[in-house]
Length: 283
Image 1 (tube, one colour):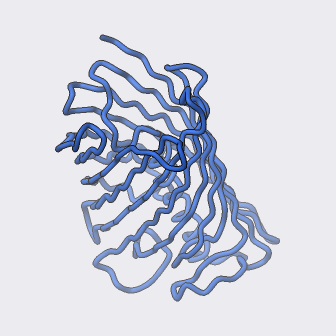
Image 2 (cartoon, rainbow, N blue to C red):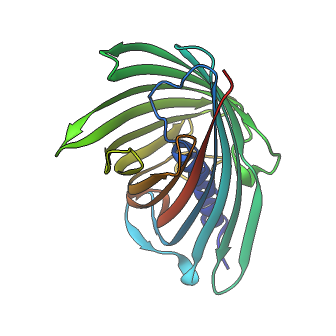
């Protein structure tokens, strides 16, 4: 039979996957959004793993030929309030399955909703932009297997810019966000990501990008356990490649694939995802 600690590890991974999907569900990153423009971005992500990293970052298979999969979806919306401010919201949903030689475990439901406001601090020649975003985190569940069931907040700093490489238009986005879940044995998290992309054609319809990102979490409870309720310590790094196609000025599709390359107290797996960006100009 699967142990309680191992099951909690899969549930914790499901929480992590929701967070990763959230950060990948939109392509604007640190660039300004036109005032009056509404961007809607539904996305879907599939993750699969049959190996794990333990508390010492040793990699090995799940017990009893275990396999974990997660199918998560989210809807992201962002609206340009002015040249300096944008408002954003995100609602995620996930369905997770763990199967081994003895049993099958399934969980599904909404995760943590997010509502944020972004302020563009400054720009350099309208090519490089600095922004700061504040986000409120609101749990949309009572089942503790779907999250910490704690309200929280995040501050995220981004630096984005554009230029040229090999005769192609290019862009980059650097982001780092610190997040705190409030309550008993509160959880501190640091999420970071670096993306570099190239536009492949003169009409700006095709683009490709590579990303490196990671996640670090810790709590006041230093006793190590994969249980996200009694102890909340884990970390991982991942790499991904994304391809985007613009059907028009209002509609674009992004597909990506990624894999975890290092970790601690998390699964070692890979993911594929797709998101659709739709722009509506209200002004």
